[in-house]
Image 1 (cartoon, helix red, strand yellow):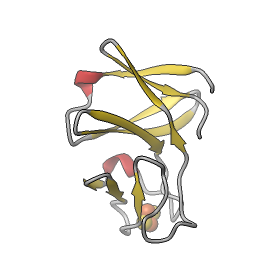
Image 2: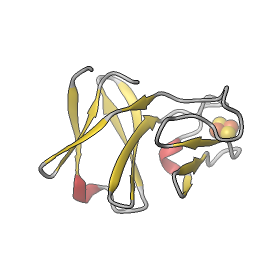
Image 3: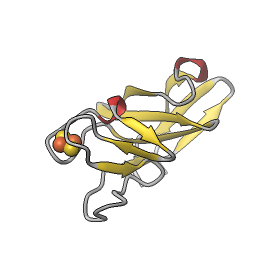
Amino acid sequence: MGKFVKVAARSEIAPGTAKKVEVNGKEVAVFHIDGRFYAIGETCPHRGGPLSEGTVEEKVVTCPWHGWQFDVTDGVSPVNPAAKVDCYPVKLEGDDVTVSDTSV
Ligand code: FES
């Protein structure tokens, strides 16, 4: 299961926004949607766009560079399942948002 690393306080990631964090040297995008937090790889597999800067609708983030989309709950593209980013378990511990250093 990997080790959970504190990446932010809950209040640092407002609802409907995301934050780029680092977990053991890996860049991870953490999203706050409807009271829940989700973590996927920050880097779009197309050309490296920053997914934490993408727009989110429902639970799908759209890359700000050329529009590839990924489900934040599993990292998989709803359009092309072959396109995906890593997905990391998130745990809330008190006011802390923690992310596993091991993807699922
Ligand atoms: S870099 Fe993300 S869609 Fe091109």
